[in-house]
Image (cartoon, rainbow, N blue to C red; front, side):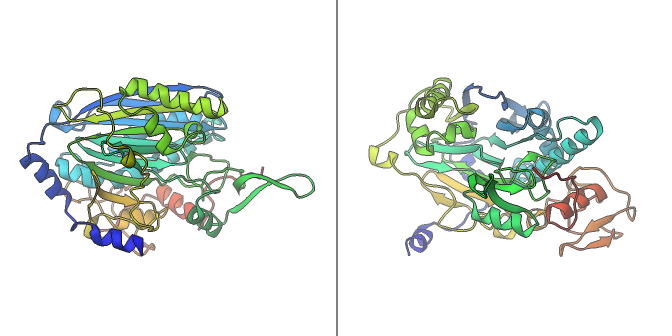
Length: 439
């Protein structure tokens, strides 16, 4: 009842072009300032972070500037986290067509993120096969791309990104892929051939969180982990929002933070402080609560209107500070909200416009439902690895999930090379693409 009334109160949906045009006409064309800080303590030394505040989509063109921040929480070693830090952003950008407008860039970015995450995972797997090292390690990945007031977040695992707006509303921009807490992911893993259970001790006693077997991983999505089944997928949850001209604060952190403090407590602990000090206080709060039980990494990013000072103003009234709201509007499924394309929507919710959200673990759904513009794409290029294919040399996927010979003219369905097609089949439980070993 309450969810239905909230939905009825939302204003009509607006296309992304309208939102950008409104910003320009309203005098908000100046890009906001981006200020950041980071802090952390190492227990195992498997956390890594990425800070690239001054990226250019078009070399030499300041108007194409964007910023990137990421946190990688490795496990069973550091190889996957290091590899992802070094390659993930490049893999994402390789899936973005050249010479497109800012509006088109923001529209294709969610799909490019999916392609980039999957490509990084495939390349890491191949690296392990050829070098015989690092194949046991895996990593979470939370990648944040900021272009003006538009924030796009892609994540696998349980490193989290939250948004704290000037109105005191704390919004969750990621979904935790923990088997213990995510029922949809448990059902997907078991449907794909995995077994979900707790660790069995002698005598049949079960202890600890739910894990996926083989491998014993507590997560349902990650990059790496080539010793477990392909049902542990690298396909990220992606969310894209547009802030108001008041800006906001992002807190990106590994589970060493979130296992100790809630999203709301982390936001409240550092409101009104510069980003560098804010990151240190979030880490301090986590250590004060539970001690150093895990690697703790925190990156704080402030998106500040260019006509404001660099220190964020204090939060508004206390009654608003106590609200914890996820931008997963209502109680809809993680895998079916806010898709782009024909269903492209934006929802005004406080100070935030939701532009896109998708969490499906199916490549067919992620690539088929919001296809890239074909204007700048070669007709036979693999949607994941970006390798050009010779017509009729290989097979491609059709929109129904089957395979067909390449047509003489390009169709609207995504092309996959044989290697990436095998990866897709393996993730859907159709074939084994990894050597599995029981733990």
